[in-house]
Length: 208
Image (cartoon, rainbow, N blue to C red; front, side, top):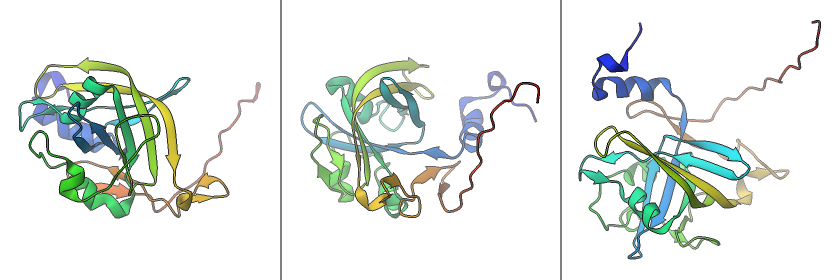
């Protein structure tokens, strides 16, 4: 099977993207509006970018329910700050609840009964229940596509501080027996880390 996105509608091609680009880590992004309202929303188009400077990125799409940009993007455009919280599997249901299209100005922290915690370098709150937090300042926002359905904004954040709860560490390293982050698959499916394997990188030897 060969799929040509130029010959398909956005709605037809999108499911193939999200079912083939898997598993995707989830950025549970907390931000704050100019009016001081806390926002919390999950985004599965998320990854690291570079280590010099240390940066990560995520992609908020168009809010079709309200026909506007998502609150997270509006907040980052206004304040230049945000926090990426990682989703452990015991918070998966609450994460999903924060994806609800609440009206503008409603805090997901309050509606889902989660706890905002002060950050060190930014005004946006951390999510107290998460064991990992990246405090970020806006590095660059790149718009891809239209101001409308299907469009996205690549938000690149410079990492100012990383918080890692000691409860998920063993010998100073993240221990996946203690930390089970949730990943997104296609449709309404998710995955977590239960089985792992190790492969060592091979070095090229001239003449071999």
